[in-house]
Image (cartoon, rainbow, N blue to C red):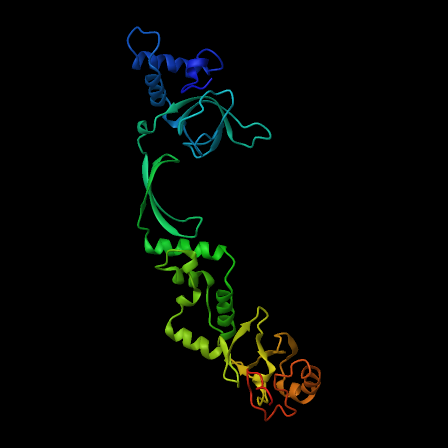
Length: 334
């Protein structure tokens, strides 16, 4: 049967002697003089006064699982009739059984009204929620149990540190991964965590954290000189450079945009040649090279022979050295 206190149905059965003895003493203390019993609410409150360290809190409404004031986990066994109440008193507790984990089983319990509990401490915490948003919370605690909480403005430094940690626990976005590789290529020392903390300062969500925001103007200029993010082709179009994990830098570009360019472009202080992926009009690579001159001299005639029939609207000059670079197709009739 459902009850607010198992002692009403188990006063003389399976109750530890000290609990039974103290319950009767509490009855004399808090009850009416000479009476055999006291009211249900009076008994529950008297039990709390006698065993304040045994308070437990349900993990969810109607859940048998609880968190004890000590911080350990537990669960209310099926022999208990206490089915409701956010807070309960664990009057008789056994160790967990095999197959049920190491959490304690509460055999005898009593409901505790929330307003009977006086906070033992008040603590402020900064945390990142499941949506990746940083928030500050002030919590009224009863030992390890949360009685009440309300939002507060988080400390900016703590907020940045927590956001950075949450940011780094997630897979990096391509733009952030590319930045770290560019910094390494340029020989600029950078600690990912330090960058993340600086980039997170003043932000509210991990989705707002962009590592580039952590770089000052001088560092950005140095990075652009020694590890540029893009390449401007002879055609005039700008293309993204791909900094790879092995230290190479790749450029995907349609070969018509490089007409007239005799040598492979070099970048950075080390004058590193680009790894060029020359694309057909359908966007698929037809050749990968670090030696553009050799491609024009030896491979281009074969590529021209193979592709000009399939893509007649694109220019395929016999002499790529003097041809005009372009990203456009030929006009009809030309």
